[in-house]
Amino acid sequence: MTIDQVAEMLGVQPGLLQPFAVADPFHDGLPLEGFLCQKTDHRYGAIVITRVGEEPCPQLIHATPKLRYPFDRDGRFRFPPIARAHVYEKLDGTNVLAYRYRDAAGVERTTFKLRLHPVLRNGTFGGFLDLWRELLERHPEAAALPARNGCSISFELYGGRNPHLIAYDEPLALAVLFGVEPATARLIAPFELELGDVPAAPLVAELVAGEDPVARFEKLRGELEARNVRISEEQLSGTEGAVWCVTEPSGIVSLWKCKPESIEEIHWATGINKQAVLATCWNALETVDELSFETVRPLLLEEYEPDDVDAFQPHVEECIAAVRAELAFRARVVAAYEAVRAQGLSFPADKAAVMRLLATRFTKGEMRRVYGALAAAAG
Image (cartoon, rainbow, N blue to C red):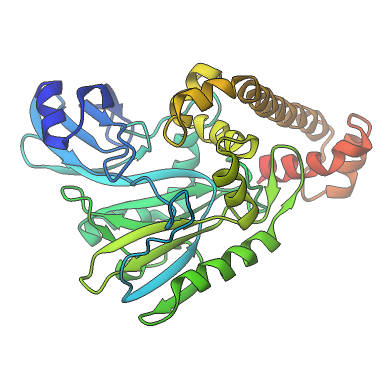
């Protein structure tokens, strides 16, 4: 298939398609070729595989869609009709989609992809493939969920060892978010999936037909705000927000994001802002090998106008420098810990002794960050 044929299949401009030629790390490096869609709607991250191995084998696989707020820039809510709604915690990590593809002989295989990459891989800033393999050893059922449920499964890979804006005490975890029908992009709510022992995102609220979703949304937003505490310039302790999984009377499922009140007010009142840019920088680490304005800008353009992004460039570069500094600090902590381990001590078995030794290498003001970085690295 040509890029124009793929663009017609997806209903997008060819400029929104990124060609790929990759090796599937879960199936002995089997070559996959095709195109990845960057349209920021239900087609976000969708792939059209054109060749599997040496054979043409065209197939469309929708992925994790771009989530929207349930209101416009003027604050007018636009919730669809609600038969019921399940509200889940919005986990702040790396999205991983488990999907199945077939070869020319009809043999189906399950593999995994990042949002804007057709397979899982280790990057310069994150060992996503290695982390996911570790999680699959802990949750072997996760790889069987697409075949069991007849759809792709959207997961979140999160925890202290996969740093983002929200700092987690748990070193490494996964959670099922929802299902996606590969051909149609229809969403399947997590409670409709057969998950076995694989964890789903925590359920924080439920609504039924007749309840006021706007009042509930505002109440929840305030509760989320109360949970958040800033622990550094780059990170918060608490929650990124919630995702409303709305089931309409027709059975259609749609997803809507709810973020803490102050974050939403900043976003809608002033447009692009430092907190949003910091979050985007952390997300960019999933798919870029060099963190720079040029690599972060395309992700910012998914939410903001080009003129606003370009005018904010000095602040974007400040955020990039802050994230780089945080990564360097964590690397420094790990190096210092390795020197301590050489003395026969380990974290957390010898926590107090380790922290005393590290206190000679870091300032008093840094020690809380040292503890968090060490807990994540040693986890």
